[in-house]
Amino acid sequence: MHKLLLIPIIILVTVSFSCNKNAQIERGVMADHVMVVSAHPEASEIGKRILLKGGNAVDAAVSVQFVLAVSYPAAGNIGGGGFMVVRFANGTSVSIDFREKAPLTGHHDMYLDEKGDVVPGLSTYSHLASGVPGTVDGMIKMHDKYGVLSFKEVIQPAINLATKGFPITANQAKSFNGLKKQFLEFNNHQPAFVKNKPWQEGDTLVQPELARTLELIRDNGRKGFYGGETANRIVEEMKRGGGLITHNDLEMYNSIWRKPVISDFMNFNIISMGPPSSGGIALIQLLGSVENYPLSECGWGSSEYIHLLTEAERWVYADRAKFLGDADFYNVPLSGLIDKTYIKKQMSLVLPGKARISSEVNHGIPAGYESEETTHFSVVDEMGNAVAATTTLNRGYGSKIVVKGAGFLLNNEMDDFSSKPGVPNSYGLIGGEANSIQPGKRMLSSMTPSIIEKEGELFMVVGSPGGSTIITSVFQTILNITIFNMGMQEAVCAKRFHHQWFPDQIYYEKEALDSLVADKLKNIGHNLKLRGPIGRVDAILVLSDGTLEGGADPRGDDTAVGY
Ligand code: DON
Image (cartoon, rainbow, N blue to C red; front, side, top):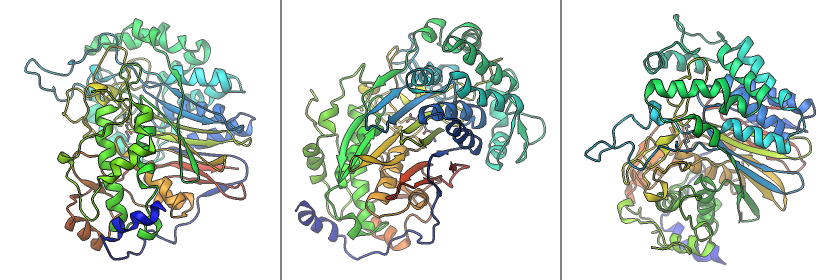
């Protein structure tokens, strides 16, 4: 009934559009038993081998995480953090938050000068940019509780890869060469990613220091990272560059089991990550926003479709800036934010056929409010257990600072805090008190590792990197599958667009909008801006006969491997 009531909103923007999607796109990798999709071929292959060996999806995911720390240093990490959502074959789900934390001597105004202005670069490329890393604690906790292979078996492939080396991809060669100057500038030693002659595709990257750190973790568990030699090296590195992380910060770090945020969307059930990620809440708000609109009648890629999604994104990101932060420190009105009546009310303010202006759009008032280079991988095992994990150093190669002697990169996740209300971070996101810096607090994330059920069964595992665009990339991929009946690979390949309230712009990938659609959007008041790739979605779809389809994003070196 609602659908009919809402149709006029859509058709006021008139004219039907043919769908922009490319009908020729092939299906992704198909497999009957298991599937691993990650940002690097070595990691996907090793994940599959762990599953072949009898490991479950958690073993494979933990192994993939450590392998990515070796084979994909731009974002795979042990010096960063992230989130993992797991749905077990029996239908229960858990999530773990291994997000970095502000050092205990971190404080509200630590990136401001005496005039109160943000000092450029301090929260991104300095020793002050790093939060206390969470990955090692998170992986060990997850594996201890749910893994079936020994920890040695899951971490050893990463050690072997770091010791023996692996052939780098063309993209990696380009990236190492492009960043050589910065790696040398930010370090007083030569990291493994720097060599005298330019890197070529297929050159071997060997990382003996990282191998040694991983061995310490293999042999001593969390103490191999948060104590002993590795902790000494991290603290030494901090002293060298005026950073804040101390032995006490490292010892005190703890990853946390969190209840996933769960909500229905049509006849699907969305299981995603709650605070300190904004991803799950924002994704549920976005899906709820469009649920009652006849999207398939609008047509994928039509101006009506893009207008509607943009207007939903505009208010959802305004809510994000106001209400979302680490719920251990700030009272996040979670249930109010994902309440369908609230979402409907916010959508009732959307104008048919006219863009709203971001400066005139404020956050809502949900119930409970009193007075805001990453990598994703997806795994499904033979039993039907599923893992969605998104993890990061924040920007590509994080702070670009490699802990001397320990061979791993430190994150620059502190930039995800709001350094000053209203001042955008490196993703252009603004925030306020909810996401201000406090000692031991976790910075707000957009990471959205998600698992979707259909009629109570596993249906899809999905997530993406991309900073602020993670949420909208996951959102559009889900709509491509659930509304537009695309296959997994096709849904991942489909071009994307993004709006985040401020700046008041629709960012779009090349070929995401045809010129007619672009003109219509401009005519109703939208600002358009072409940009490079948006997101890198790695996802798995369970087809109706139980076959798994891996969708690996061609925007990177992402690879699906199954059997
Ligand atoms: O947690 C966040 O939202 C960001 N630190 C994620 C960074 C990211 O996705 C970079 N990748 N392209």
